[in-house]
Length: 385
Image (cartoon, rainbow, N blue to C red):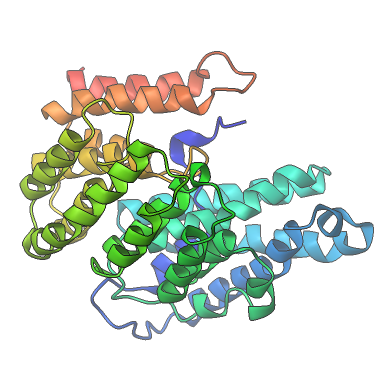
């Protein structure tokens, strides 16, 4: 069931990385807070035990393993709570990540204790997805020394290329992640119909994280020559190839919400009927401008509110999946920052749609009272009542 979507499913490793990194563009320096460093290492120890085991249902649920796994989950939950208490000085997004980390670590522990092994394993695997979201927000000019030790090479080598790429992104090994994704894209046995996720991941890492607009060109040219591509996808890929050089120049000098909006509008024009992916590269490029703008502009004004709104809209288009998304966070934050701005009225509409979509396929037919109350609070901010 998807009914936890409103605040996203963003787990422990992201909050750890965010807390460990003082700020992008700065070299990590010792803070003197040995206690916090110990908490983070305890969390990673819990992840090391539980995440590899969760991949195999028989291993994860085996009676002989349950003592060790539950102890690791218990430690994970306790230390996530301690981390959340230490994250009060973070910016809004980092605080969001830390609160989500505590909530989800507790859920994993509770699910496992009650024998809901599939649910516990599912939540644990979102650690990787969540780390991908966290570590692909901004350019790769900040690092996490702890994350380098996240998964050993034996676990990494045992995984197929696409899940391996996710782990590599989660541990900030971006060049190796691109290599793994290139394996996926050049594999003739993998049908193009399931390539959209790897294609999106590839562009996010290359463009938004590494700022490398040249490496994808030969990869996409090879991909476009596949005989099993349907015409519209081939056209989309060729549009990416054509757009990469100009977007490289534009994003390098762009630093305003206006410039991001212009790239978004240009991308939308490439996908007139909304049923293709020609706009995807433009959206990713625009998101990189918006992320940098949000990071550099702490003043809460209408322009920042629009930046959050546009970032949320883009996340609904380029996000990895409905289970793990920061789109609701960006949309809600845009309303709270500038409730009287035109973007706020649009944000509440999209936010409600996203919340309703999160329940699709579940046994819940209407939004719970708590969700309705939350939306009513945001509407009141917009209406000024």
